Amino acid sequence: MSQPPLPDLPYDHYLSYQELIDLLHAFATARPDLVRLEMAGRSHEGRDIHVAIVTRFATGPDSEKPAIWVDGNIHATEVSPTTACLALIRKLLAEDGQNPDVSHALDTRVFYVCPRVNPDGAEVFLCDRPRYIRSSTRPYPWDEDPVAGLRREDVDGDGRVLSMRIPDPNGAWKPHPEEPRLLVRRDPYETGGPYYRLLPEGVIENYDGVTITLQRIKEGLDLNRNFPAHWRQEHEQVGAGPFPTSEPEVRAVVAFIAGRPNITAGITFHTYSGVLLRPYGTQPDEEMPAEDLWTYQKIGEKGTALTGYPVLNVFKDFKYHPKEVITGVFDDWLYDHLGIFGWTTELWSPQRQAGIADVKPIEWFREHPASDDLTMLRWSDEKLDGRGHIDWRPFDHPQLGPVEIGGWDSLYAFRNPPPQFLEAEVAPHADWLIWHALISPRLELFQAEALPLGEGVYRVRLVVQNTGWLPSYVTKKALERKVTRGVVAEITLPVGAELVTGALREEGAQLEGRAYKPAGGFGWTADPTTDRAKFEWVVRAPHGGEVQLVAKHDRAGVVRASLTLAAVSHS
Image (tube, rainbow, N blue to C red; front, side, top):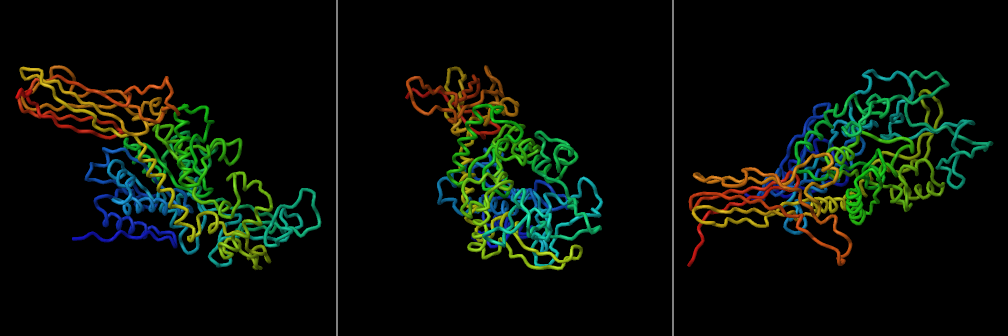
């Protein structure tokens, strides 16, 4: 019976939870030799958190191959990361047998792909009347509903949550001198008006007619502050939860990754900024082992070459305030606790799409020239058919009276790529992820032999080597944290045999890769065989018996060999 065709990935909309599950099952049905589904856990509301395990199972189980973890949509409104994860899966399946890198990756590596870490939050965002929450739908830090303040929502029923501008002589905003649809900041000493007060679209509960405060969002968790590394309490890190991995979504991810020591790297997809972020978020690069920093930089250079996204160090370039750090995040946990390379990919830069170069993602929203606003508006008019920035229109607000509603539709133009840009935006990232997987350490057989010494005694030798670019331990941080051991070799003897020298199980050294080689082959360059490990035993055994050998490393895979013990032939 022929297999069903590989389903296409829709790029014209963002997938609901049921559509996502149906597509994952369709992938697994079309290529059961390459895809198996597993549940990492359940969300706060009880939805399954699916992980696709993608490898060629005929070449060995996933647990015996080096692996890479990829996830998306931990934040509720960031749904394009789900598409990026699915695009990786589909590329692996579609290009197997056609693209040598893809085929080799499927033969020798594993991709653990979790397209939607936070299914509950995504359902809130993808409903008919979307509502902004940061992550989980669980109320936090209090259960009760807010009773006062402006609650952001669609008050005019057009399906969008925009902005409200209210004429106010003390307002901070004025029309752009060249384009009245835009608002720019009022000069420090300017008078004369007209001026506006700018508010999110929404209703004001228990309005006293004078003061307006923004209502606390009831669902105050940020799941990407709930990971164990550098976790801090709520008074220091908003949204962190009551304790590390307190939230079922984060606990599922942490347990899955920690339970699979073959994972050598992890990439989490977010939006938006169009950058590749690397640790640390809490301290400068000088605190990182130099070899790890150099390797991060090389991996990042390849990422930039393939995706066009620049690499930013979070501590230096991606802090929301120069005096504050972000803690309890995924990539810091991967690197600092597990000693594997962790990355956060922020998909989509509307500024770059509009033609504004060299945008500093955080600083741009604090300060940028008014000319950038004109450029962005022109992009909305020409490329988004005016759907990015909405013309202001009068509305009789139930509490404020006459206002105007309009401005940027941030959930459409900023939060995720509009669907017409989606495929082109996510496609290059699959190439980087495949490349990242292929640089992982990989244990391969170099030599396996049984040399007869006479009188039924044999010297058995097993030599393995690391053919990957990265060392078997992956990072110097892993050595510092003592989270992975060296190559372990085991020998299984045939019936009636005995071990003369050696041990049934031996632990050898870590194996270097090629990552730390210098730039040129100068006269003082040397390549010692630190990429190889040798194990030897002396065995007394009956003629014709078989010895089974295994060498394994948690992060580099497993090698097996079978040797028949035979006397030397003198013919």
